[in-house]
Image (cartoon, rainbow, N blue to C red; front, side, top):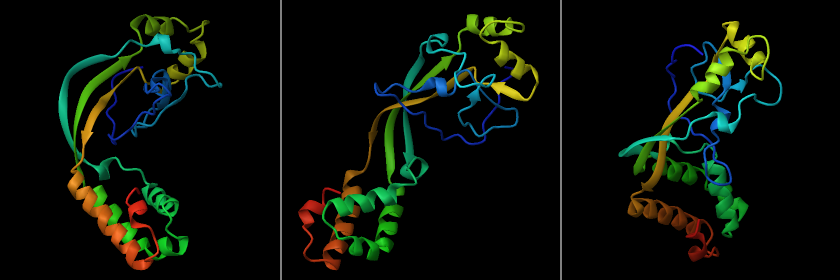
Amino acid sequence: MGTALPLTRQYKTIETDAAGEPRLMTYLGTMVGHDNRRGEPGAICGGGTTSPFKAEDRTTSTFTNTIELVYTLEQTIDVGIKADLTQAMVAAGVPVQITDRLQTDLDASISQLKKQVVNAKATLAEYQLKSEILTELDGSENDGRFAKCLAALLTGNWRLYQAVSGFYVSDGRLDSTTTDNIIVNLVARVKLADPTVDVAKSRRI
């Protein structure tokens, strides 16, 4: 409720469900502390274990023209990439003792990957709680499914996510030549450390 609140951290990714649709209700209809500007998913409005807001309480997406985005993997890459890469090497037949010795090389490869530039196409999408739902919320002071939610908001300690907008990235392209060179160099170091490793198999990392 209230005026829009700018966020201080802008890179947030909304998880998708099995159908590939964003889990919008992890935001819409949830509440966050008045001073929380980190853009994290909120708590259930009014407490409890089930949100009073349903998926049908939101609008369908509103799209604008598709735009071009340029960003580096460092802005989006998962912190677990080193563990994933190590696991992939082991799955490719690289002995654990070798991967342990190659941790410095792994760090260097990851550092290079993070600097890779991605050219992507993205479409702006915005979802909102329907106006009639907000009207129902405003009238739930004494009863109704939003009564506890409204009571929490009226304390002034919470804000409600009424809308969420972001970019749906439909296409992304890496400089495959540079990426291949990084992997080739890593595989070469693996071969140097253990000549018995099947390099062709390791290239699938």
